[in-house]
Length: 168
Length: 241
Image (cartoon, rainbow over all chains, first blue to last red):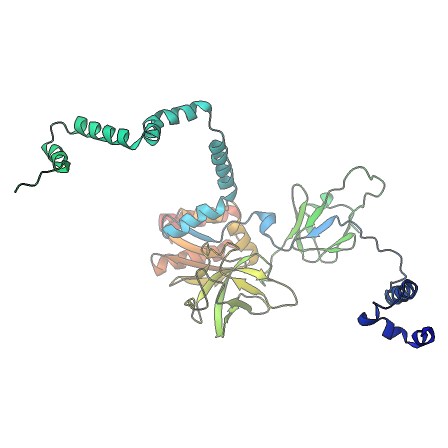
């Protein structure tokens, strides 16, 4: 049996279905053989390491960044209002950015006073939000009465809403 | 071999002049400043070669370039040019931008253009567009939208008006910030102008006469001193020309 096993070729032993029956020794041998094959296949250049020199010179072929060239479309004295708008937009990108920055700073920095002032005006709305439905209705009708005390239509509307007993 | 840029600022240089940029090998702790060399200068290893004749200019901190006069446009990526559509073929337009080769312009490179919604571009139209590919070995490519997909004034323009060609130096003078020529022209009468960095200028005013006045003045500005120009502008403003 042992002699038979030795006769089996390496390639056959490496196959998946043969792996189960193999003992530890032959397995190790096979693995080593495989490793050697892989490392033999890896080749490298026998060269001194290339040193990348840092480059202190860069090239730029356009005149744009050197001479601060403006936007190429222009209109004067209102000949083409669209282009004049574009001129303002395209020729002052730096100023615009600054403005945007300012706005964003304003938005983030709301002082406590601002906050208090804002909530002051919201007190009524917030109160409504936490009130029960019935309370809310009562308030609405009170407001209506106060607002349209002398307005007959408003009163009529209110009487309409009341239950009318059917007449027979 | 010339040693430093700084001594030569404002001097006339010729193609073939060489600058050696000192590599600070001895001083390692101070970080050396990077040098940006612009049009007319070319890097070759640690040297900088001059490849156009002109005046050496400098802009702080470390920008150097050659201010030269030429009429032939060499495409550079990112520059805005005026092109003439010369052919429609399938999904690209061929556009003449005055360079050695015609540029291609995709029909999708217009604002709002889709495969179904083609832009209305005819042969002979003028387009103001930006170079998105400019390589000395390849055909230049144009686009009429910016990276956000907006036209920003690019695209087909120029119903009426007059297109003419001036030198690249004059175009840069026109586009320079606070350019005297542009400011003085703008004071005369209402008109519209499109200036492409390829040397083409398109002008339109209320009447053909006014258009011609602007065009002739621009062309004559090429070789005029500031004084001569002011005299000319005054005479035009008075209505004597």
